[in-house]
Length: 82
Image (tube, rainbow, N blue to C red; front, side, top):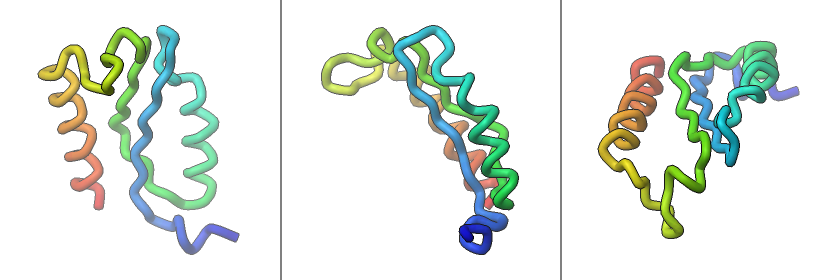
């Protein structure tokens, strides 16, 4: 049983997809599973839809300013919960 290891552990969810939804459809089942084992899920998400259009072939964000701003908010939320 993984409950003790996950109980009250803060968790953030990031999804990546080559489609328009950025993997958002999987979050409902994933979040439910995390809740059931007692993890604290941070409300902020980091979705990356259309990943091939969002990043170049070297993994660099095409809109670096916006991506960095969203990533900073995402990471800060994790530290606020912890």
